[in-house]
Length: 126
Image (cartoon, helix red, strand yellow):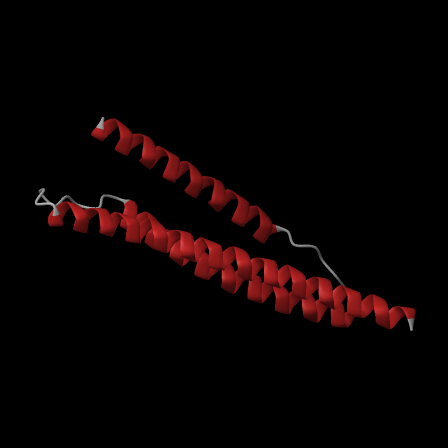
């Protein structure tokens, strides 16, 4: 009986981890949409006010990259969930390795790229 409760606890923990991947992926997609939409809205506002319409710069591209990253993260989370579920069923569990490192590195690089872009925009406008 104790073994069954441990197995159930392990599978429930795996599901909670997958749901964390889902929440994070959705947040990244929504964040990307907000970045891209805000740039487009600013361009439309400038046109409405009669100002020369400028390009949206890299904002739309950064938004699209963020949306794609969120989708990729969702797929990676799904495959990780399925792999962990299969390993738990076999009684063999291996902690996440490379995928955690990859997500961390890509998130840091994207954050630095956004920060660099904001500094560039501030300097070019100021």
